Length: 221
Ligand code: DC
Image (cartoon, rainbow, N blue to C red; front, side):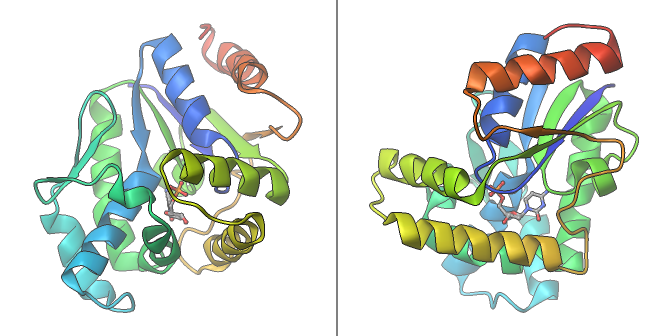
């Protein structure tokens, strides 16, 4: 089975790219950030402390996370697709995802999914830790201002009204946390191709990614 790994910071355009590439290649698509968000959502809902890695890992295991074909995520029998995008969950998810116990549970699930189907997987540590042997690895970046503006538009589209400064500050804080943590920090795998999406529209990003896929797999997207 073939895994295409796409890593990068929040707002770099990973999700849109991963979804479109998967669609064009006929691959499945897995958003691993949504898995960490679902655990953070459950922790907030159940009142589990964000520094209690052992309890969070139990929550992650018992959530039996599932993805519908249209990408909706179900956690503990509840469709949490909208709730996992709320600012409160974004603010909590970095701390939740920094626990080795939580990561171990979700890593197993991610590897199981990658073992049975061709899949485009996006996250922070897919090319470095989860699938270090993936034949195609992309590391997507963009300037913090552009990433924050993209995230703000997504939030506004979802009915959340947030300021530009506030979004940028929250994003820079989350990047620092994700990059600085001890376990599976956000970083580019040595064999990943870096794409800067700052000045590009989505079609240009997909086109650049398609070239990498063709070079590495010999097939087009
Ligand atoms: O991609 P996202 O912004 O939805 O991810 C939410 C958080 O989950 C992000 O701040 C870091 C964490 N994450 C992670 O630690 N490892 C992954 N493979 C994916 C996401």
